[in-house]
Length: 465
Ligand SMILES: [Zn+2]
Ligand SMILES: [Zn+2]
Ligand SMILES: [Zn+2]
Image (cartoon, rainbow, N blue to C red):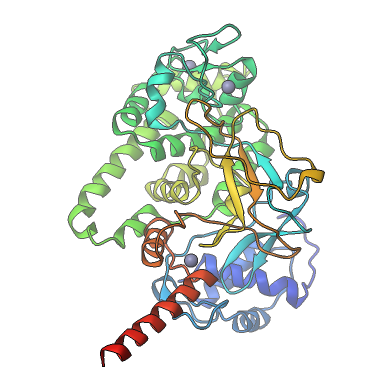
């Protein structure tokens, strides 16, 4: 693409959402720098700075908001409230038409970013799509099952008895066990549940990182290490296109925010901030020692050998470029990945490419579930139908997601999930969302309930007077 010199002039309805999204992704950049970024992102477009400025004005993004204040374009009745901006864009590597034919991706104007909308009418109980994770992490509560060979490290299925027939252990270490060879293969490549780079039998320094994760029950750190290992594994042993896909997904597709920026908003930051920064530096160093050791590190030579082990004709691995080091191994990148995991990790511990596109509402129209392997989607003649009952303990779901309609959904409706427990009262929900996801909710239910609360307060004041 970068070498393609043919340029075209995009129509306003193509240009405006892109400009609006760019502003949302870079809330503090001045217009000149924003335009420079735009030129980098879209070398194929002939757009003058004058036209760019006009597009910014039209979409309401000409003035850089301060401290990430986002105007609420959808609902003028809600005041403008400061929100953390999560950098986000469309993940070009997902084949939505194949995974979820009833759904399409939409970019919303006004800095809201991407979302999913229904292409056709959907009925209650209907399965919109099912999705396997591209990164998996085990629940710290389940570590005892892993170490006693009672659970698969890849799909988290509990074995009926320890170490059953057909199950396999990692050939290099005794920290991972799998239902069968297929789960083992997936864990080594497509989900990094047990990447060769994180297998203590192959990369000895991984022991320190793993014991840190287990001791501190640090599921986020586990996920960060797996994301980087996934990319590095593809870079060293896979196809270049695969490594690029991961890079695009992480740094362009998924919503993210610096963990530091997020935690600095909390009241207690004043007291714990310094300690947190020290902690992050330590974890960051642990990860670098495992996935990008330096010549002065003890693990360096072993790591270099591991990198070329799968390339018998290669004498030396190809060194990382400066950009690659900056993008994957800088402290700032670590903090960004930390924030990304916080925003995108599902209860099952997985990261899901398409699911990550779903926006929040306190009255969601779809539900996301980890159902048992025995679940069969209802046939069209059975619709509408009840949603499947809650999964019983002992019949735990797998880490495959099933996305179901909670009620009738019409074509063009946005598909919305709830990021938090929506049975909670308004203030609690909004605080949970602000803490965990960096925004103040102004969904129709929040607006409605606010008005009701105000009415009730007025009535009370009247009665008292
Ligand atoms: Zn399995
Ligand atoms: Zn292993
Ligand atoms: Zn809400």
